[in-house]
View 1 (tube, rainbow, N blue to C red):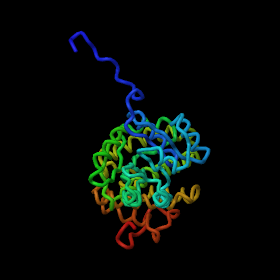
View 2: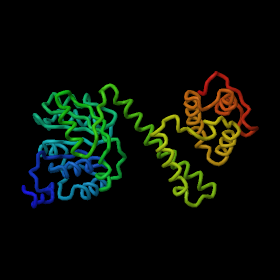
View 3: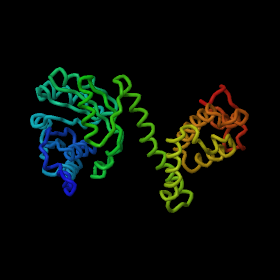
View 4: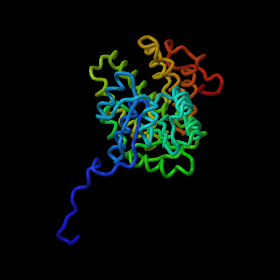
Length: 323
């Protein structure tokens, strides 16, 4: 190419030869999004399975013109099969498909469960298939925005050594970043993600409910900047980002919180106390909560401690801890 020539626009992915045919078993929120992202990388979705009305709608939205067929037919048509079913359904599904001869020699079979590694796919391996565990650490909506969110998303990856390069390539093609997780560590890895993401939704929803009770008309607008800053600080500084009455040792304020919650939202008290105890533990360990301020606070947080409705936090710290 000479100096006056300019390269043309990059080729449209659909004009490139497809490298793998892709099938989806379980057209929930995850499978169609992953298949759509693989389509952008030049692969060709050819079949999906799903029976609920929501599954049919998601498949039509994210995988237009891809037929919905039974799971065995998905396996018959695809070089790469994504198993995107609930965790509890995965072992039985895998065993059933392997026993019926659905798995072909050399077929890539990928599950997206965070809980399991590749051991759950042992029936696939025995049938000659190639097992991969690729779990996107992302929450999904079942809409096209999910495909965009995969850009830069970490994937928890478990694979046999000989398939590591293949697993890595698939994740990168979906726009993700592979993070290798040992087979034995998968349950702990998944528990960590659930603790952070799933419980965050519960905490935010409960906080919005309480703000509405307090008369705040737009709790989402009030919480947005605060929670955004708190999340950013936590990711940057860990325990160093702890703030608030528990980290400061303000036992009276915490006691007042508990009293108000018991009156207006008793269902939130157990969660508040549990998170406050965990916060106190971390604040003490990090040197943010001064030991001389901790005794009254731990009394408030103790199941056997002081009644938060009768005073300002002058409880005891029986048991010498925050549990």
